[in-house]
Each structure stands twice: as C-alpha cells, then as structure tokens.
Image (tube, rainbow, N blue to C red; front, side, top):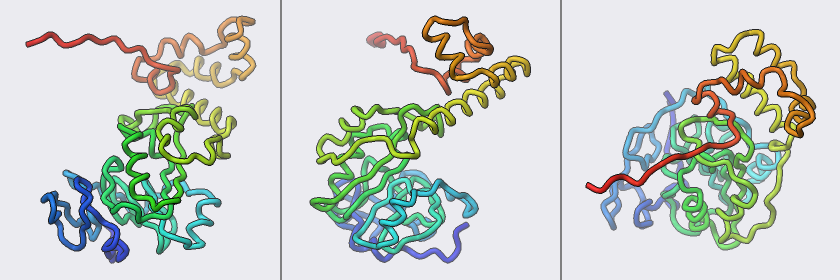
Length: 275
C-alpha cells in the first residue's frame, strides 16, 4: 500500500522500549525486559495488533502555517504525535501514529512512547488529546522524551461535537488542559484561530443538522430548524421566547443521536454485588 518505504535512519538513535525505556537499535526484542515489537512495511510497530495501513490518497488537516514554518526551518528534532497523513515529509520530524499513514515513522501508544529520554527539541500533538484515555499519562511521556527546555504544542477539543467515536473521551476546558500539563512551565494556554468561536458555531451547527438529517426527522422539521437564528435560541434560553422551531424534534432524537451533540451526560451506576 505504501511502496518504496524505508525505515527512518533517525530512529536508530531514538527508539527505546516503551515498557522499560531501554535503548533499541535494530533488534525486535528489548534486550532488557524482553518486550517485542515488529516491522510492518518498514515501520516499527509497538502495538499488540497489526497496524491499519491507510491509503495514500487520504489527506489529513494541515498543521497550520506557524507550525509548518517551524518544520521548514529544520531547527532541532520534532516529534509529531498523531501526525496523520502529512502533505510534506520533513527530515527532522518523526511522525508517530496509531496507524500507518503515508509518512508515518513509528506506530505505537501515546501513553507509552517508544523513545529515549530527553531526545526531542519539541513535540506537536494536534487534535490528539481528546482521543486519549489518560491525557495526564501522555503529557508525562511527552515531558520524559523532551530535552531540558524543549517545547510542546498541542491543540485539543473543548466545545466540539462527538467525532471519531468511540475514541473520543475528553473535551477539556483551559483549566483541564493546564492540569494535564501541570509539570511543564506553561507559556500560554489560549484560543488559536482554528478554535475561534466562529468555527465552534460552524462545526456544532453542521453536526446538529447532520445528526437530525440522519435520524429520520421529517423534512419540514429539518427545514424549520435550519432557518432558526442564534437570536431565536438565545431568546429561548433567556426566557424571552418560546422554544424555536425544531426544538422538540431535537428532544425526540434517539439517545445515540442526541449523544453526538448533547451538552452533557447523566450517569447512573451501582457497585457490583459481591460474589
């Protein structure tokens, strides 16, 4: 699927066992703890299962001009976690993924990075942390593989609808992100242009209409909902107006559909009976 691929020569000085962090070279078994990995299409894979190979025609979202400029400069060594299908392969950037994309260098688990301590000058992880089961552990791994003074840049979801289910676990506030990265010296935690309120509304409204469209709601209700305004919804929330057209259609959506665009979730649970 990815012909003419060759293993990235940088990896010989970077790879380590994700279990015990002992340096790895060309061997597929850790000489210290016996943990094994394998090569799949010349990509070191540190997963128990075979890695999915994504067609080369797949394209991921670009990094953004600010971060592309950093990679173009080639200053230092960058680890790009969750790189996806990048358009350009930069020689001083190691692309780490859970699948094999066109330029993927290493496949593994972001909670257990298969790299040596203190080897990267910077780490990128864009639109990754909402999909990790333990973001704090992944942040600690980034801390471990960075050189002293090394930098990290992440983008992660806050007001975003469900996506890439079922592997969408967290939508963090600024304070949640700061908590994940509390061991770092945080220079800034704010809203980048791609997460601005305008994009939030566009993404959410698109998901609301797509969810309604796929849930056998009547065409009349869908049309009425699509013609409502932000002012209509604000007036209803503030008690100045009745529910806008489409409100009751949203309320009647199946639970799985509501779960894609809901404001929150109710959990009812119990402690298992002793056996």
